[in-house]
Amino acid sequence: MKQTPFTHKHIALGAKMAEFAGYNMPISYSGINDEHAAVRNNCGVFDVSHMGEFILKGEGALDLIQRVTTNDASKLTNGKAQYSCLPNNNGGIVDDLLVYCVEENKVYMLVVNASNIEKDWNWIQQHNTGNVEMHNISDKTCLLAVQGPNATKILQPLTEMDILNLKYYTFAKGVFAGVENVLVSATGYTGAGGVEIYFEDKDGAADKIWDAIFEAGKASGIKPVGLGARDTLRLEKAFCLYGNDIDDTTNPLEAGLGWITKFTKEFTARPIIEKVKADGAQRKLIGFEMVDRGIPRHEYKIKDAAGNEIGKVTSGTQSPSLQKAIGLGYVAVEHSAFDSEIYVEVRDKLLKAKVVKVPFL
Image (cartoon, rainbow, N blue to C red; front, top):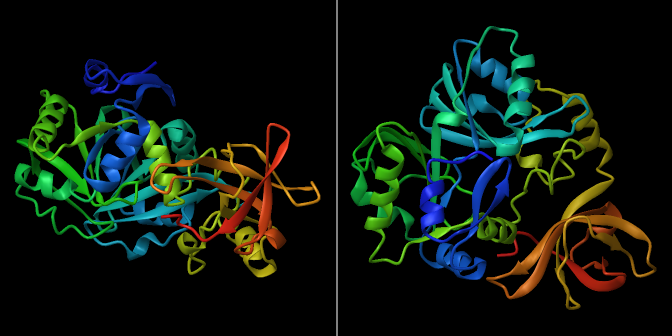
């Protein structure tokens, strides 16, 4: 198992550790509900250094990104980022990712999911027909997500960059906690506000930044947070998780990602995805909440009142904020209307649920 530069910190703090995407990662420290509440109401710190980062450089960098992603990266100017996805040849999703514009038309950073680093690299490289300079900087890049309504207020004293006023999906580069070349972006996968901090771990930078953040947030009750709460937080906001809600077999339109699918440019499998738009998707990713008592889990069958299978659960949990069981799943489009009654098969029992608007919170 791989370690991140913060693994020793997690172990020293008594974190419950487990393997995730080949890394020894913290699942929880004080408990998922406690950590979840810390992020929603105050501030929490996630080690997400397992994520992948690629640098694309050169005159053809933008053209390559435009061809392999669904969103329109030509709209990005220096210091801006966007959410996007890499479609495969059949219109499915290779991965979802963030695209950062470091230098317009010339330098971009792509942030991909940990489990897909090699797959994504090979996919993009395969389409690199214009000799774009590509660098996989995943192994040397640290990434901390400092999330919550008080995050930027806690972090501002550590830098001269104006992170208090960073607009959503923008970023700044500068000195942070005495470390140079740190990228701070107003992104994150919790829907609670905050920033993500990218930097190279050299000359003890990882320990320096971690310690500075926790010292700065000590009086405010900042907490370390594991991947368990990261999952409940993103699910309350109905953010897709690759491998659960989206994968190589899901079309961006049926996954509710039409907003990052721009038909104003050419990209892989555009005609296939465009046809789905014209014909209408056969299934749809819906949000639902349980009416009967029970927790929906990944791969549980979704049925109609007569017991016919109409779909599958992709993600589910007991929402700490709402105190009710919620989930995402694909169902045949005729069962996707709000307030539709559906049933989740839990241990051979059909438990009633209803389709609701997302995000849940």
